[in-house]
Image (cartoon, rainbow, N blue to C red; front, top):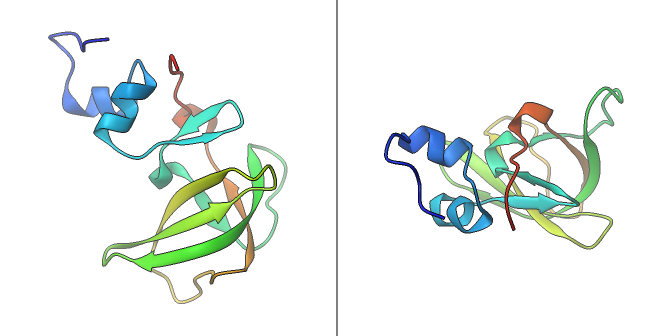
Length: 112
């Protein structure tokens, strides 16, 4: 798949047409059948209300990257995923159980 001539970089990043393009332009998680970028995941310690997608996860590692923290998470299915979070005072640590949520509008429909 080749991008159309009128596509902007933001459009290509936000709405790639294939997994190849999505991964070429940045990190992408596949959670079950959902494709989503790490920066679109939200991490909470408490299970949020059930009004949107939510997955339990265990923090395997966290890396301070200046403007944000990159979390490597393990889902109950055994899948691994990445989540980026703003630097706050109460960051999850390795082995903590957390919940990841996201907005449905941030999910990407991709050809595998």
